[in-house]
Amino acid sequence: MLDEINVRERDLLAMTKKKEIRAEILALRKQMTALDVAAKSHEIVCRLVEVVPWDKVKTVLAYLPVHNEVDLQELFFCLWRQKKRVLVPVCLPELQGEMQAALLLPEDLLDLRVNWFGILEPNLPHFVLPSEIDLVLVPGVAFDRQKGRLGYGGGFYDRFLPKLSLDCLKVGVGFALQVVENLPLDAADCLMDAVITEDLII
Image 1: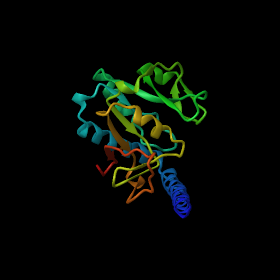
Image 2: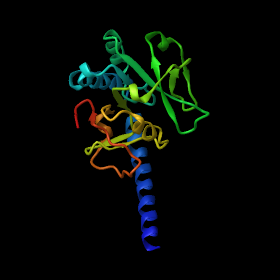
Image 3: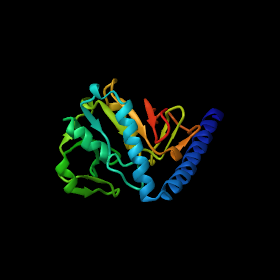
Image 4: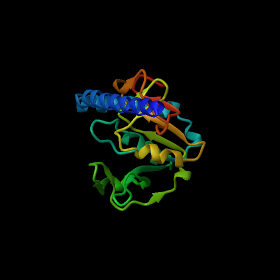
């Protein structure tokens, strides 16, 4: 009984700490100017181009940015020129808490819809199986030096990432201000294979 109480107290402390970190990092990221976001996003894209083993990658799950997230759309055009498939997440209202990966074509950028979270996604999504994905570029609120990730609290990526093939590469993408020393992670939180910012590769 005492052990159960201690576990509940520990989980409550971890949840509280996560909320505090989310609030702090999101406030810092919100202060970034559009020029800062664009310049640092470009640096991150350059790092991704340099360090990812692209010869082994045919299908990439990325994302369309929201709330000053790293903007990877410059990378999309590089990938399309190399005939690689670019996917983005789609959250389905009828499957609350679940997301799927949908193909994104250049022309889709002119025909996007805003989902119930305010995130852009293809208007007529064509879904791709998780097993077909070679690389996932994962957004987040915060990352730590052990390659841990803190999301927005919905658990979408934590439920999706375990569906990937074992050799799929998971790369956390964020700005340097989003990296902390340690995150209060639990068993449901998926670790990244690497974390890349404008001046860090973890």
